[in-house]
Every structure is written in C-alpha cells, then in structure tokens.
Image (cartoon, rainbow over the protein chains, first blue to last red):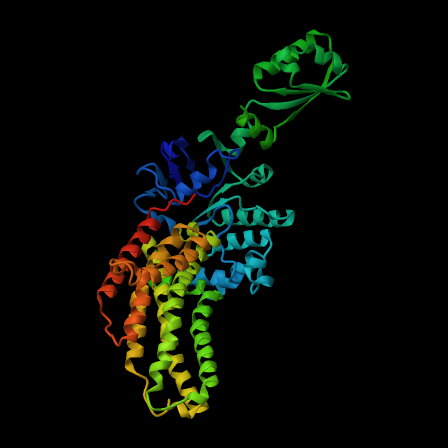
Length: 299
Length: 254
C-alpha cells in the first residue's frame, strides 16, 4: 500500500533561514500519524507545504501519490485541514460558517446539522462565532475540516483550548474516523494525547526528521526502566557502574535503573550478584512518550 | 471534485452577511438626501418653480457624493479584504480545491457590485426625495418638471471614475491589514486630489482628482460619460486589479 503522504528530501527556506532540511516523510494509509517537535522545529511549515500554502520544488511533496505542485486542486479536494487557530468567520454564526462549506461542497442539507451534532455545537448553532470560547472555535474548526468527508485530515494542534472532556471527545472522534478508513496527520504539543491516539509517529528537530515509525517501534527500543527488588538496594546502587549510577535511584526496597542497552542490563545483573546481593524481583516499564521525546530532542 | 466559480461566488456573498459597511454604503446616500430634504424644507419661503428644481437638488446632492463615494469605495475595499485578514481566512480559502483566481475574482465582483448597487440606490433615493419634496413643498415645482437625465449620467461617470480608487484600495488592503493605511490614505489622497485639481497640469493622471473634476464639469453642463479621465480610470482599475491577483497568487501563508 503506497503512503498517503510522502516527501522526498523536502527542504524549505524563508530568506536565508533554512526551516526544513531534506525531510523524508512517509504516512501510511489509514494511520493516525503524530507529528512532534519542539517549538520552531518546522512542524507548521511542513503542514503548510503539504497543503500547498508554501511553494516547494516539484517532486518533493506527494499526497495520494501525486505531486502537490502539479495536482494541487485534485489533492486538496480530498483533504480537510485545521491549521493552528481555525479560520472561521467571527461575524457569522456556526450554522452560517458550515453553510459556506455546504455551498462549496454541495451535500444533503442535513449535513450541516449532522456536523453540528458531531462536534457538539448544536446548542450554539445560531450564536455568532465571535462570542464562542476558544474550545468551541476549535470544535467548529474541526467540523469545517470534516464537512466534505475527506480521505485525509491534516490537523495542527486540534485540541488547543479544549477542556479534558473536549479532548476526550476529539480523541474518540479521531479513532472513529480512523476506523472508518480515514488517514489523520496530526501535530500536537500534548504528548499524552499523541500517545493515546497515534499509530505512527514522526519527530522533527531543527528542520530534520529524527525519528519516524510505528509508535511501538519507538517504545520497544532497548531503553527501559527496571525496578529491582533487592535485600540491600543502597548497596546495589553503590555497586553499579558509573554510567548507570547517574540514572539510578533507591526508593524503599527497590533500586530503579534507567537501562539504555542490553549489555548494560547484563553487566548490572552480573555485578549485583557478584557483589553478594539477593535479587527477588524485576519489573520492567516502557518509558513514556514524553521521556522518549525529551531524550530525542534534547541537545 | 473541484469547486466551480459560481459556488465560490455564492460562498463569498454568504461571508458578507452582517458586514456593516454594506449597510453604510446604502445609508450614506440616504443620510445625504435626508439632510438636503430638511434644508429644502427650511428654505421653503424662497421656493420658486420658475426653473427646474431637480437641477439644483441634484447639484447639492452631488456636492456631497463626489467626496463621500471615493471614501465609501476605500472603506468597502478594506472591509471586504478584512473579512479574510481578521479571521485568518486566506489560509482556509487557499486550501480549498479551486483556483485562487476564483476567490479573487469573486471578491472583485462583489466589491464592484456593492458600489454599483449603492450608486443605483442613490439614484433611486434622489428621485424619491424630489418626489417627496414635491408633496411637502409644492411651490418648488418638483412635480411640474422631470428629473434631468444628466443626473443619471453623473452617477454613471462617478462609478467609472471610482473604479480606479476601488482597485487601488483593494490592492492596498490585500497587502496591509490596516485601516489607517487603506482608508486613512484615501482621505489624505482625496484632499490632495482637491488641491491638485486645477493647480497641476498632470492632475488628469491622479485618480483622486477625478471626482472633483467630474462635479465641476457637471456644474458647467458637461455631461459626457467617456472622457480622458474615464479611460485612465479604467486603465488604473485593470492594472491594480491585476496586481492584486499577482499579490494573492504569490502570497505565502506564514
């Protein structure tokens, strides 16, 4: 199955500043692809390139197998998007905003009510959008992106300003959309949300992609936290090699060690046993996306 | 599935709902004529039906229009592009599956239609106001004479001379999201146009002089529609509308 989004050595610069450097993205069909990176890493720029808002050389960005420079209109007809703050008309009501989409994408009249229901704004349909809260605007932005039932949704910070229940609803909605065959490309600062929602991940730093793959590929790497139950954890800590001591701690009867390599683990166990300690139990924890992200993006 | 021009035009019209500028461009001529009706009623004791009262009535009306309409044009251009600036709409419309020219062309058509409908409305209100004065102060003789066709010619030529100002200020407001730059400059340039008219031999190249020139010529009985300035105004309109499209088509959304 060919990827829905594919970039080949994609680069972009504003003036002399190089924002994107040879990016090779590959977003599989029907995935929820989380696109992460620190502020200023190039996430929004990448999204704008994918939507044809910024011009890049031909044959560097492909969506649905077609070059965005050559088939922009055809590609855009299959995409719904929400970039940063939603583009909605404050002097109009939520209903009027969706009616504009209805004019652009003719469908059954009931589609407007259907979308209002989906985004939970039926009660505020006839209220002017300028009086909406940030969260309500965000929901409407998502509603506008979904209106024409696109194959690909590109969402930049879609849960901005939403309260926990709103975030939960959007998460459920995204999973539901994925189940119905859509592909979702999502950028967010909320790593816990990405962790709960995404099947694939791309991490960008200083304009370059530093990780790309399935979520579990990142989490099932060699790095893990191990919790060892020992008869004397403090002695255990003193027996550890220096490079492991820095990442280790003692809590009650347990010794916590951050392992980055299978050899480290083997060496540590050997030293503890040779030091005369009794080992009763080992618990393994996968690191959170947050700690992996911090690790990958720290200088 | 791409979007047709008619769909874009309809959607662009829907966006103009609740924009007060459109109401203002209709209320403006209404307010001017209301003031004139009150003025004519106050002067009722000097009323005479020896000359056609429509001539003076139109003259006084157009004295306001030649200054107000260029400002309306600049304001309307600002309000129309501000719909997108204010709501960060450019990034939305540029990700819709339609050529950028459809959105730009629709906005230009709507802008031209706004000013056109305001001028047509002004013509209708002018006629109705005269009729009303005919009922209130019959001594003026509004019902004994017909409105002079030259009044309508004035409005047609006013529209043509406004085309250049509409295009220039639409271009400016696409580039700058700033009321002072786009509408404030219109006030300044219009005053400059008043000063230049009659004092600078190349004033015919300066579109902000056209409406005062037009009004002066109307007072002197010149009722030509197609003058040198009308053609130059059309030239400016074409140039700046084209430049506006180039600006939009090359615009990077940052």
